[in-house]
Picture 1 (cartoon, rainbow, N blue to C red):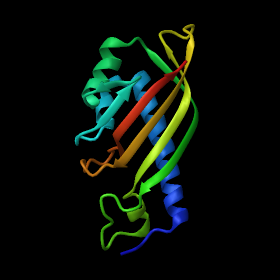
Picture 2: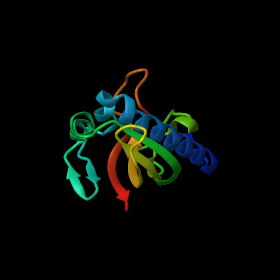
Picture 3: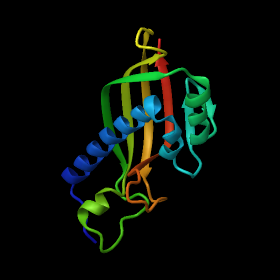
Length: 155
């Protein structure tokens, strides 16, 4: 089994976190019907401003039916690997393939506007636990899924 080195794990987690955050926040603004696909089908822990949200479909419903248009401006993204072998690395995989079998903590901060471009900006902080997407074999599938999320408006 090829074991990934720390520099490869750092590169994979950093690229994965950055790509995920960009895709996810784009979907919140312009592709709301895809929001549920960012969440693991397993039990998830989702909090929005202290309110428990049932699952990815419920998040999608909130953004589609309850909120006005949103616009996110991401100012910082940071990540930390939680588990270097999630769920497990597989014999025969390359080190790069095994480096994608990690779970990670991702923190995001920025501002969000609810409504048009003239709406006030609100600071936000968001934390995700991302896991590798082993649920889908599609060619253009997402590499990472949300297992846990905590979104807070900063006041």
